[in-house]
Image (cartoon, rainbow over all chains, first blue to last red; front, side, top):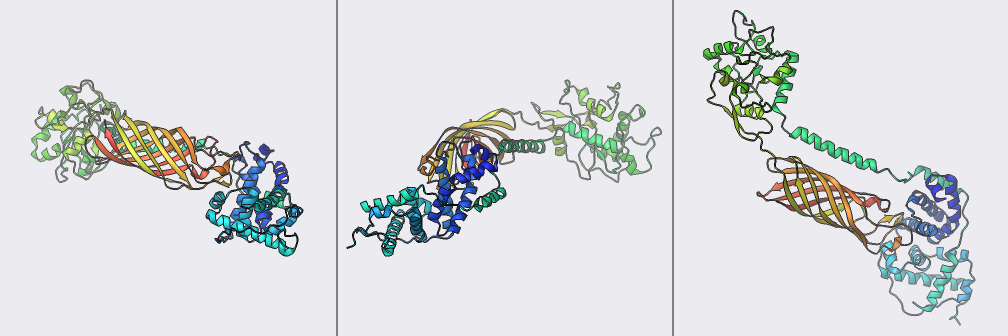
Length: 177
Length: 434
């Protein structure tokens, strides 16, 4: 299929798109603040996938390769919006945590909605660290920020998510009396 | 990090990592339209680029050789003479290069082998211009135009001495086997000792006989210029060629001393250099250092080899649409270069071109963004190079040089940083002639 895509076979390109579009749309929705922005990100990402497909060496997961491109396109789109990252003094006190079982019961769409409600800086760092698996040094290099800023953004993202959950009373707070 | 944070993060990761969201049906149409407008990045046939660069280099070298190399005097004179004969020149001040100073226009028509003096058999032209311009090679139809008698008449006429001295015989005897023979050094066409010569055509005649050349000029012709024009390209020793008039008169008292071009001897030199590199894109400050050995095997041509180390620092790069973390390439290369050298009064210019064979190449530093993506990043490839080396000699042995250069990676299918394919730099170094 990849070879056919390289030859410009539109049918194969569409099959490739349909195979990965759903997962990649989730990736875009995690980084975008709304559906329209996510679709624009996905469009740019797949155009880049097809134009760079000759550089895929069949030595790794195609999905992983496409996912990286999608993440990179999402970051570039967000960087055009000039994300503001503000440093925050790290707090060592334990944060209230929702009940893990109840949190697991939340649907992916609900989690996506929570993430989408985060400010851009929080959302990007949270996604990169928690879901993509980058460490703070890598995030710092990607976003051209300091690792400390990345840590503080992640901390604030977690706090904001918990606050949203608690405020919405969607989940019980295990520490709340 | 707290335990609760891990659990909190894991919930999000597990739920969202492989989640699939619905995609609108028209999104593919938009992508397909976008693909139609973006140029597909297929493998370019780069061979033609290098072939073109090589052809351009050779063309520049050949053009430089044609322009800068002194023309063979005999060929130059022959060509010039042929043009004149074909067009039947009517320049009033056409002169035969058989002397030096400016021809005196006020003087009466001059007798010469190519411009016979007035005589009953050869009446003087009515017009001075036509008399001078009607220069013809002696032909069987005009046997009376024999130089000795005319020359004698001219010599006897003091008024004609100047013009006689102005005429120079551009005789080229370089390739003649008996070139040291006095008879050969004299114009055989005009030499009574060689009456059997049969001038057929001007060109054939000129090839077999000394050349009498008309020159379209209003400028005075100086002796040094004549000597320069008459100098053969390569002569192993200094020699003298008597002027035509002197030879015909049996005198060689004041010969023109020619300074032959020195013969070429191959030479070698070693160059040690360093260079700041200015890569095309996506590099921090980079540098190159190395040493080269050059063997100049011909007057203009040389070959070069050696060893070169280059370090290219990459802050980040776009590889397959993905960014990399900072790293640097460390390459050890062996240059195989050909050079075309030409010399000026104080400088030597060498155009070098060839390839750098990468003996060792590795990526140093973090490159984790490409791990597992099937997009290797390396620079283990050969490089095409083009440089312009300007050398300034210090003394007989030492020289300094500066060489702006351009290098382009010849992709071997393993490099995907197109922006880093071209590197510019300026080699600065010293040179020792062995």
